[in-house]
Image 1: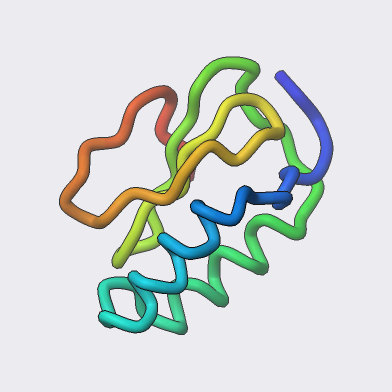
Image 2: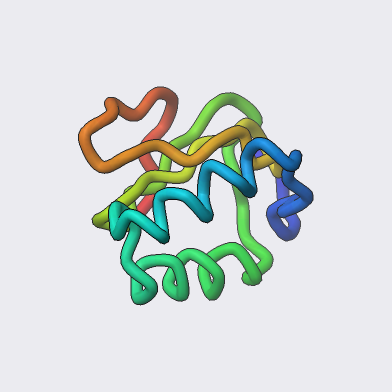
Length: 82
């Protein structure tokens, strides 16, 4: 397990993708705020791939690294986090 805070540094393309989904209302502001609070906490993350469902979108990563944001209809990969 990796222990620490999630690395939220994202590439320009990831940020643009996220903002586009917010503009088109695919991602709710409430779910984005829930993600922000969740990501700020120090916690254990699997060393391998993981997925966390926030309702209108999913966050996926590996260890402390955020890999991408998926739409609610895209399948998760890796360990599902509560």
